[in-house]
Length: 432
Ligand code: GDP
Image (cartoon, rainbow, N blue to C red; front, side, top):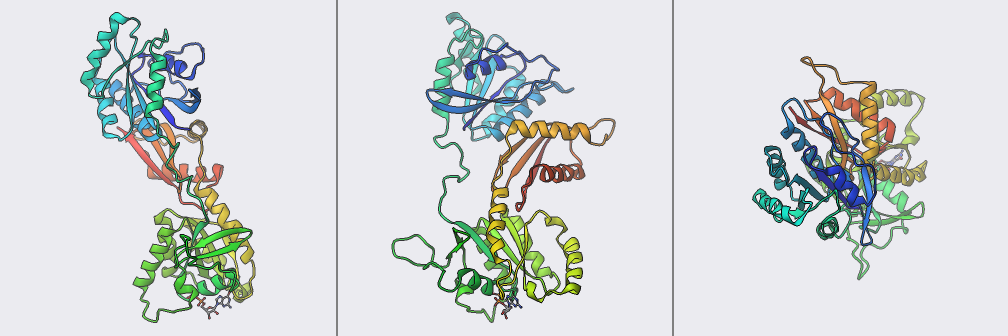
């Protein structure tokens, strides 16, 4: 559902307004400076449309004053919300902290609705009009406490909401796109032919279809998959002049066209620098990844022993990728490819709700606090998943986190939530 974030200084009436928006008659909790309220998303419905209201409130004003705290809120709102409501106390008027928030919100492309709260009667409407000066357009006068203007506000909120919930390409349909990549002679053509079973490659240029003729549609495990950019492999046209540079460009374009890549490695040979480069291309492009060790029929006890050590050493940075040991020649374990692809794609599209994520990070930090530096430890204020395909996270902090601590968070994130087969990105937004 679309997310509406409510931003504002302490005591402007954010929680009262949130209660109005979600239509619940809860005990009104005003934010008291110094008291941290849970940043919980609430479900709301208005005129049959569902949406989520996130109360960004409860920031502890930091030592430097309120402006920094409200700026942090604004950034969280920008990162998480489809629509942002900035609440101003019309009886007080716009403060420096409000203006700091406006500057940050202004730079984002997100729709911002300006709410002039505590306009309890018609006589106070002039207080609301004064807020035109903020440059956010029309101030919407509301009395969150008495409910005055809240219906009108909800209409405005719905108006500003995007038609489609999220641009996460969830609507894209058709076969999942797979890149089959690896250095020359690892067995890409052999595997493709094995998977396609010669005549099981669905015709690639059917009139009236949108199938790109360089792709192959192949049925695996009762799903159709689109193996992108496979014309060269299928035709067994070996580019005799294929320098590594051109091979790398072809890999790049296939990986970018795909959602998930199968990186083929030759299990009978040492993992090479060129293999590493192919793996890096997939990780850097942010695609889901499955590692397939081909030519497993050539692997004996001895080789197996060395291979295990090579894997520990060479693939330490991508232990999260599913691995399958196959043989394109004999057909060994190629049936495991489709389940591995599904696992990797699921990890690539996994989303953790904001509430759950924040509960998790609080627990983690309580159990293993950030080391103290220069007398104080940086604090994690809020964590949100800003996107999928691949999963991206934003950590809002006061003070800079050690890179080592960020890696620790990433490691635990994978241990506790999986994300098997997908790279993940963590961005830290620090306020000093
Ligand atoms: P590509 O350059 O990655 O497309 O590799 P090819 O599919 O042309 O294979 C290169 C060589 O490895 C060929 O001689 C294949 O017959 C051989 N090969 C491919 N897969 C296997 C396998 O699983 N086992 C063995 N023993 N040989 C394989």
